[in-house]
Length: 228
Image (tube, rainbow, N blue to C red):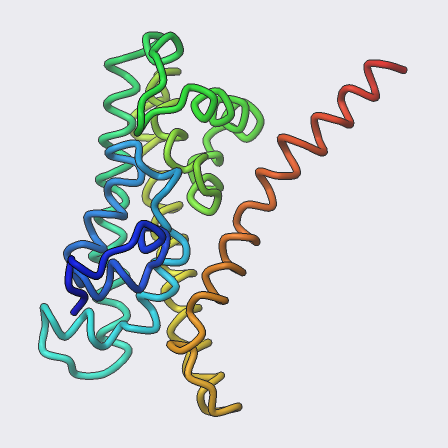
């Protein structure tokens, strides 16, 4: 357990900090908050789920009697997916109620208009499947359900893509963390819990590559085409 007096600001991007501080309940709140409270651009969603896979036994046993790793993983998969699905519904509802107002709203600590614009471009490019793809893209996943609400996406259609995207995202990250940890430990005798900082850096780098490409290189390409 982490003592609050030991807190440092860089802990906010350290997924292990959240798991040791608040366990499963804090993890569920963070996954919900990424889209439900517009805080996704600084919360470590991808890496948090990956590390949750590593600590799956500890997290699951805090709620249910721990029987085996399969039960632990599927329990976490279901309950975390529900938190993400509900978070997306809150974002969608807010988008439907707020409408164009959001595009004229001033920036705050938890709201950046430029991210909403980027999510709109992402949605316009991929349509309904943007809700699924956005789950794997930091920042975009925070605002994609809001955009879906703003453009009045059909509720049944949104529900379908919301469930598919969240279940796929949570499952992929959770199982990857759990089984990669086991494989590395058995194959090389390396405990990934001692190298989480490096893992987090790699995950953040990989997950942000689409954003870097789309909003820097793709933009330069369009500018060069216009010049021609």
